[in-house]
Image 1 (cartoon, one colour):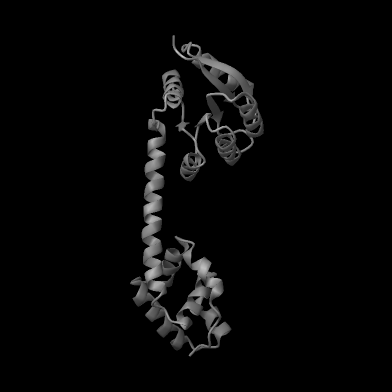
Image 2 (tube, helix red, strand yellow):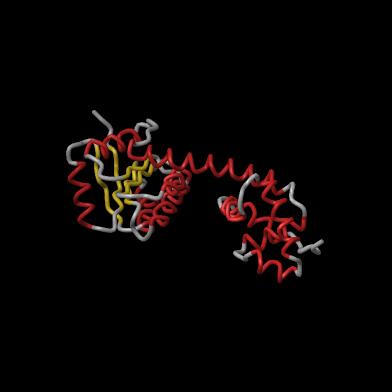
Length: 234
């Protein structure tokens, strides 16, 4: 005799709960033990009833609320596994969901078989990532790799800049024009052009617009920027 899988369904819409119940009727091994309408209820009912699986819609109070509920369930009921589902989802939140302990994430219009397979695999400890999530994972991996490359590139250039060049770059980063910076720092336009030329050469870029875009691609400069005291312009 197959072991019964005790399932808690979490969705803010009763119609969605009924639809999920209908999907799961084809699998007698799955028993729905209750419903919750938000992340808080999901946490309290998981603690009270220790379901084997929590199948939770990502959009209840908010996308992050369900992700944080996933974390709390994992902390308070380690034996319970959480599967999140969503019509659409931000790529970085897919990563956050797995980081918070989600067993699987289903995105888009999933078939009955998709849902049942995800529940069975989670129950039996078979690690699986649904195909609907794969595209999101690839995009986020690419973003993280690009971010890492950009951070390395920006850091390597920043350590080569003089304090004066950092000071000028700070003002460009904050949206000021070359003329405005000249007035603030009391320097001649020719002097500014010389500093800009040195900055562009070190970044190997053609314009300050490109430099600022490179800086905004990471939070690195914004983190170190406040710690530079404005030096005298030479």
